[in-house]
Length: 340
Image (cartoon, rainbow, N blue to C red; front, side, top):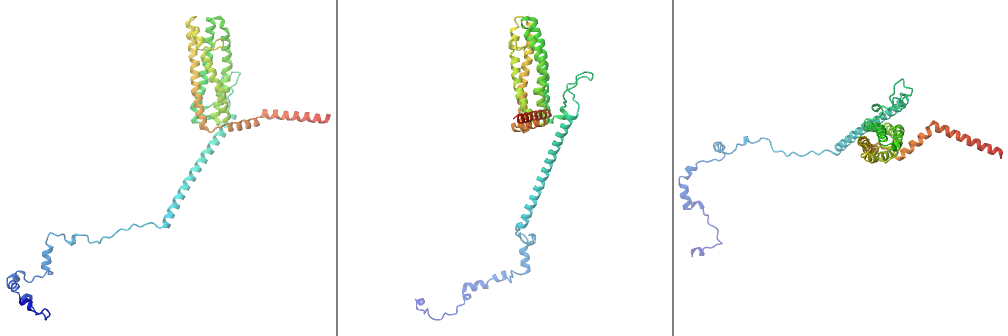
């Protein structure tokens, strides 16, 4: 009850907490001797701590950590770099344009030289002996006149014409054998001679030379003329392959009909019929190949009309004929006016 009788508002009594009996007992014990004069900041204690397993500070990097910041180019540097790229691209385009112009001039000069050489050079086809009274009529040189990309197809057309001529020549012998087996078919033998004499030069002039000129000078008019004539030539090959009787062709129908009469003659005629078949097949294939080459040359019907009109106007024979016609017409009109 003494605790409740004390005045809580009275001044506090100086109480030393270290005067407690438990604290005094610990103080008077040997703890002070154990602790001694411990100084945590002394050099001895610091050395003891450094001798531990911790990583020494000196082992770490002495350089401070620095954050590397990205340096962005300025607007002027970006504009200068873009301008340099544009100048480089422009120089490259100008160089390519100059190269294209140079190639175009070379092609034009080659075409001009070829045209002049054609007029200046001596004809070499057909290859005839010098003592022969008839001289060559055409000049032909695949290596010099025909561009490399068209040279192979042009040679194939020439080989087709040679095979065509050989087939017509063999057709004469087949029809002769047919005439010997049956004298009633002398018409076939006569027509076979006519076809050989007529179609050999006509085919050379009408479809081989136009395609040669077309590939030589990239002529649209020559291309169209060739297609027009060669289409009928393919139709003629088909008719010759069929072998209609009394048409002068040793085709399949006529050859099969002779088997019962004379087997040897039938075999000869079948060989010629096979040649006509090969002609028809090769002509169809080459016609398609020439058409594909024609599409890559840039030729057109408009260019063909322009070339035709230019050739007609520059032709001396046409000019002389037109001049004579105009002169006669003017004289006639002047004479009528005087009579009136």
